[in-house]
Length: 347
Image (cartoon, one colour):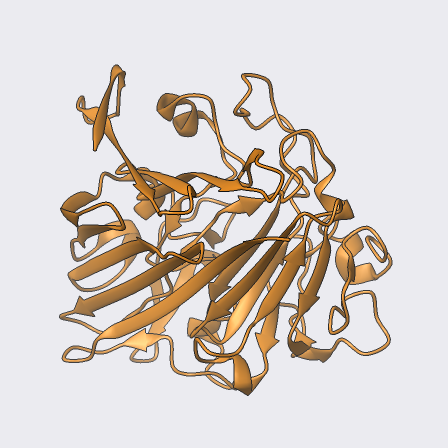
């Protein structure tokens, strides 16, 4: 654990950085502000060390970007239409931060807060946060525990738990952006496979605009591996949001940690990543609006510099109980549990 005393967070205290290592030489680094995943450095078979994650040069740079680089987002990841919930038949307003909608838990969501470190060792760090009743408009006191664990086989295991004293929708995810070819390469040249037959169409604001739709016969189909570039902007659905920014409902067989939800491969064939998750959906985001985001080298990223694969409930689920997935509303006495594993593989 290291404190970065060169700059302080908005609460006046230094950022605390934590690096985990495995015996094979992989390192992953985190920051307590936003429980943010800062870095993932993988030793390749050639002996080269490759950074696979987009990130900023300094902890303070993370305060000056709107891409949620590596951040833990909540209480509700993705969008809630019109920043409104329906509670007992009445509209319940949330704080909007994307036009009239709420994105990633609101302007001061979990990405913009200090998490407390409660335990750590060489392989694991555990964070906690308390979200009081009314936080960003959400009902109930919510307590969240998040663990990051690095395994011997280069798997970063992310696990979330939460409890509330009033019914509240909860949807926690990590917003890492991957470029398995390393900095400066076009992330659209990576190949992706997604184990999903249906996706959710959205309007220009990213709000669901139709029911779940079959990927067959469209550019949204990643059931067989292909580059992100191959069918980019082919569909009207993509054109509305400048690329892929859509939730895919995963096969039922994916809803555990034994069967993969997705595979991603570097264009140079040296790195692969497999995603496992207990979440019902993955949001595929091709970095359509990354341009100008502060980069690790001190410059700035271009659009499509990285790809995010965010494990979550479908967007705006609190307002769509009809969708075929578990209930996103956490009740008092229940425990929210979700896990996502990113396994990085030198090939």
